[in-house]
Image (tube, rainbow, N blue to C red; front, top):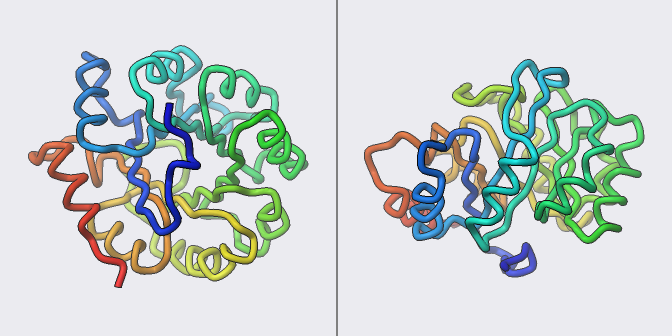
Length: 228
């Protein structure tokens, strides 16, 4: 099984947002995504309370984990996320994204994720400033920057988030995290944000699913985008 340690410094991380995928034939979909060279399967867990939508759960994580040896993560858009960290790590999540907006002791939760053998990640909503998130960065392996308000696929990216991304890029060597972006991530977004210093991209409807090109063609074109 591959792990986040397999990703080299400076390598572009291409992720598939699985709440946008077709589940009619999940095995076929996963096979095509694996063959395309997807690095990360990004699994949005939503409870209908923290965000106004319900999506994916333990059974989905278990099913996807059985179909791939690539890295799987979970984005816990749920109330009291700390209660569910152990469950999803046992199911095979290798990176766990949690929100500080919901957790008053998020540094404790992030450290616990590390303690049980997974990679910790702070998910930052558009409403949360860099300054508000700054202290939690000390216990982050990753930062997941939401470019849309969490809860629904298909939203357009909010341009004001890019200023926060710039601050996070400037600070990432000091704190030692990698930056993933999620929400409205198109091919043009990948081109621009890769040049800006972002490490990885969670692709949904805007960048991967529902396009006339094959997954392999899309991933190959994204990998070819230059940083300079």
